[in-house]
Image: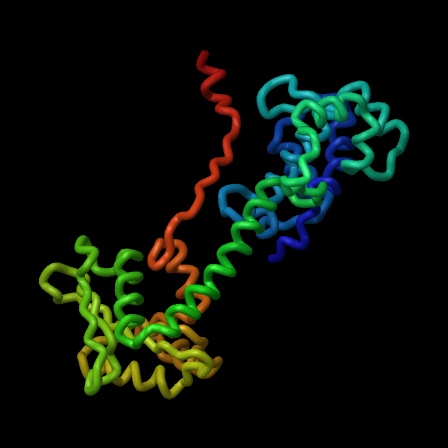
Length: 307
């Protein structure tokens, strides 16, 4: 399952207009189902989400294709979420046009008028976005992803430079924010020291400390966690009469280390490498802070329907 299989919104335009070529009104679900057949998309393909995870990727691209075609005067909305071809749209189909994209739409006065309605005079001091095959939501998602990747690298480098006990406290605070530790957000204990038998922290899942999760934290720069390290951790858990633990590192786990966990399903061991650690920290705002909030808004059609 790959997003690369999903056609971009410009590639969707012509098949979409052809689907409406019968002159009848069509619902969004009908359009999506028809186009999915045209592009031979599976249910798994249709389930792929945009980077933000807020909408299905193919649906997002179809709706943007509809928006552009509508503003070029090639289709219209006879009612909410229903689409129908216009006379201009029929002429495009009759002309046997072999491709519809943003460059092609510029030949329509309606499209140029729409573009001009929100275009601002060029300001050399402001960055501009060139026309893209990605929808605005995708561009936003990719941009945020790039920012977070850079932040992840910076966070890991900082953690690697800190003392071991600092790192141990950090991972326990993170796990607590992720929901481990029950109702008490500070229900954890750093125990990592000489003679700790391979346990760096304990998270108490209940107020009496009966249910516990044991944590091993490796603040390593380059060395990968080996299978032996995982086996030692499993042994440490066994000494404490439990099989439930989380092994976290700033580096990576070798394939054999991962296999060791998979081959011992009776032990409930979770492995978190540096990349995952940084992603969780960013998601749960541990060691990072919100710099800027952007809101993407859409029409509230229910509001207008209720008037």
